[in-house]
Amino acid sequence: MNPLTVLRPVRAGNAFEETVERLLQAIKLGMVAQGEKLPPERELAVQLGISRVTLREAIRALQEAGYLDVRRGRYGGAFVTYAPPPPGSGDLRQAVADMGTDSLADALTFRMAVECGAAQVLATTPLGEEQRALLLGRLADLNAARPDEYRRLDTAFHLSIAELTGSALLAATCADARLRVTDLLNAIPMLQVNIEHAAAQHEAIVAAILAGDPDGARRAVAEHLEGTAALLRAFLA
Image (cartoon, rainbow, N blue to C red; front, side, top):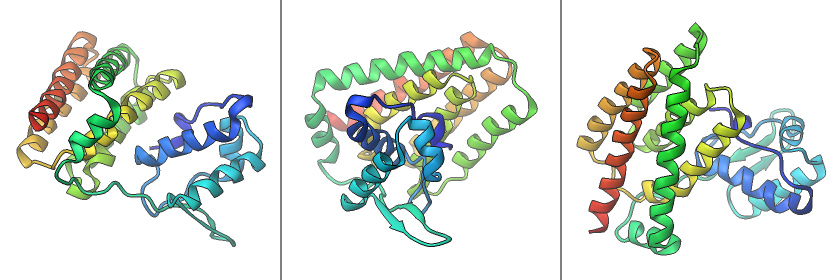
């Protein structure tokens, strides 16, 4: 997952705060995994439309908060130290309490709209061999994922659908939608039966996209996201 695909430019008035927000989004979504390095400063500064001074201030703040480890020297850079905590009793209820029930319903509706739309658009987009291979590769990576890396690779798979449309705005919007439910998803225990069910749904999504079936792609994503919402409700009941 390339974090540059969703790190959109920040506004001048709140450059520092928005830079921290953008970088934290990429970290929490697992676009840069624990132990991996952020893209070079010059690339990030250009992508975010900020000075390297502002970028360094934001990186320093995230280092102080425990999300990054900045190393100097030839092989240095800003390395991610954050990893989602394992699910614990009460974590899901606390996450919902923090965001509010109305906000949860809104977030799920938002995600449904943008991810269904992205899949529908991609199914109407001519894909080259490299693009098709990337989508299939993300699916294969997810199917082979260890439990501790499943959520990150699941995010990579879902966001690749928006990325492959070629729309930077759509990719950023889907990343925003995913981030709104990330803490909730991380709070759900990993259940093998759910992973197997999700795998079949992911296969259906990819099959519809590669077959050029926009209605089928939209329905497959909707079914998958409805299942995730149902699982959230079940753990909250």
